[in-house]
Amino acid sequence: MSIDVSKIVQGVEPSATLAMSAKAKELKAQGETVYNLSVGEPDFNTPSHICDAAVAAMRAGHTRYTVASGLPELKTAICDDYKTRFGLTYATTQCVVSNGAKHALHNAFFATLNPGDEAILPAPYWVSYAELIKLSGAKPVIVETSEVDGFKLTPEQLRNACTPRTRMLLLCNPSNPTGSCYTREELLALAEVVVEKNLFVVADEIYERLVYDAQPFVSFPTIREDLQDRTIVINGVSKTYAMTGWRIGWMLAPENVAKKVASLQSQETSNPCSLSQYAAIAALKGDQSCVDVMKVEFEKRRDYVAQRIAAIPGLSAPKMGGAFYAFMNIQAFLGREYNGVRVENSKDWCLELLQQQKVATVMGSAFGAEGYARVSFAASMETLKTAFDRIEEFVK
Image (cartoon, rainbow, N blue to C red):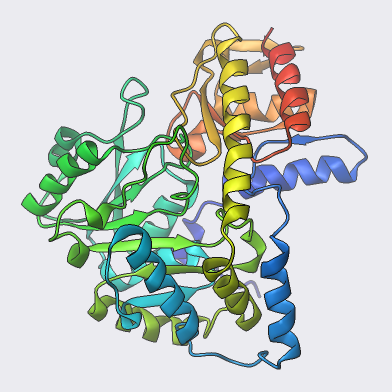
């Protein structure tokens, strides 16, 4: 007897970023030297004071279940942080701590979307957004943005995409995969449409501490006084504190949503790792100089990657105002042969770049934007230099 897989799971596509990273690791295991620019993971170690907090929690016996929605002390630290940095007041009952920001997104979609609902998703978009929305039974409505506009959604595009079934706008700022950042004026224009069309917003702000060129980050619910009640903010410690493997993310939401999400999570996963929660408290309440150190280094790498891309004829990328990605336009290099192998699309291009030059990137098609490739500059400068030397050799 064979067990049939459900129709819902049959329709789920695997994460392209993790798949490319796995392929790179496979080649590395075979003895190849691989230059991995595919994964969105800081190459820094988690700061020592955060690790020390986890060890101290372990030794103190904090190894049992916590409240399913997260430690009260961690929720307080999160709410205090948003009050201090953004002037936003949240009660701890509006905060749910989850097993990473991806889990928080899953919870947000499952708690608010019904089958047949439509959720507007600007493209390029992070690879998991569309799949998680589909799993909830809702329909992702993909709105293609333009490289000329910095891959930012315009108010006209948002308004034109709305139908009577539209309930949600998903906004990632700074953007994965493009690195683009919305200004206050741009967000205000979108907010006017959100209110006009009676939408709610899931604001993925996981990269908000990694914004460059001294430009301020603007959190979506701060734009207008009436936005906090219609916004679910998603964030976490993974990118800011180099804590990807610790799996701590959270949502800040209206209380009725947060309470139902807490119930949902209690049935799904129970609490996030207790030790990771104590580490996250130390991250939020401890010395923040580690964030500044990483940000300065990421900005140097951003500048280097931008210079290398601009120096290769036919290759381009919009300005990376935040996060640690460049979204390269590779359209000029498609429809060609590379050492006898015909390359027609971004998937072919990325796979051949990996096979022939041992440089791992991610195909733009996985982000809803054919003709592009995402590179992560969350890698050492030495790795970036060699990788771009090989990219330049590949396209020439």
